[in-house]
Length: 280
Image 1 (cartoon, rainbow, N blue to C red):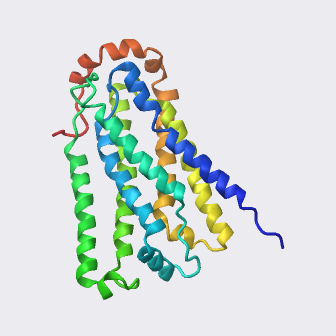
Image 2 (image 1 turned 90 degrees about the horizontal axis):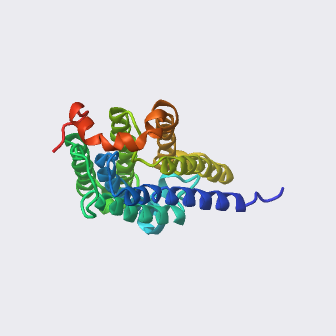
Image 3 (image 1 turned 90 degrees about the vertical axis):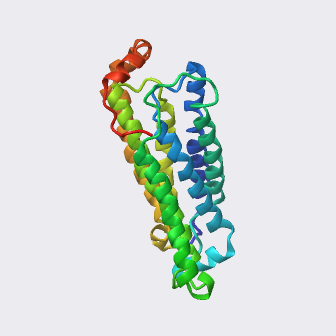
């Protein structure tokens, strides 16, 4: 029997890395050209930082922590190698840097902002609640874990890493809602780059394909069940990408074509709408 080719997973992983990494550039470039962040939901970029910091911690642990890798192998004996690659770690590190950079465009560059661009109470609650939840798991591992949390079959340090990963998954589910609402409220996607969504959508599809292909080549699907965060991220991202594509190309197409005029009256229009979330 011939050995399955290995270049397909590598090529696919590299393509996904390029798509997702490139998706961070259209928005800050557009902000720079417009000298404005009008049209962006600041909630998205605020909580995005925490999400990608969580993803960075998760991928780094599965790649470089002997303890976490040993505990993963103990819990998944049929497929003991985590389906996390270096490109996942590199993407997460790059995403943290770019998310922080875009966030500074709201405050540090003198760009035009809308009065409604304030972080909402629900997003702040999720932000600090997620951190508190991880700290609770840390406390459980330290107080109830066997052998200082090294025993993989009790409360173990891998549970902390899973909790951190689930923070990323939770944030991925939640973070797109404020931008979708902002587009709906303004009846426009002006000021918000569709290019990032097209690239993100391609990366999400490739992420699902990579995880499925890796598990298939290993001959066991615990690679999916053992890494639910990566599988969930791809599906959730693709769903919201479809929503944004419909908003941009179908629902608010006329407003996009007349975007220059709409942008000029943003300040007047925003005072006539009731915000979805109360802001701090």
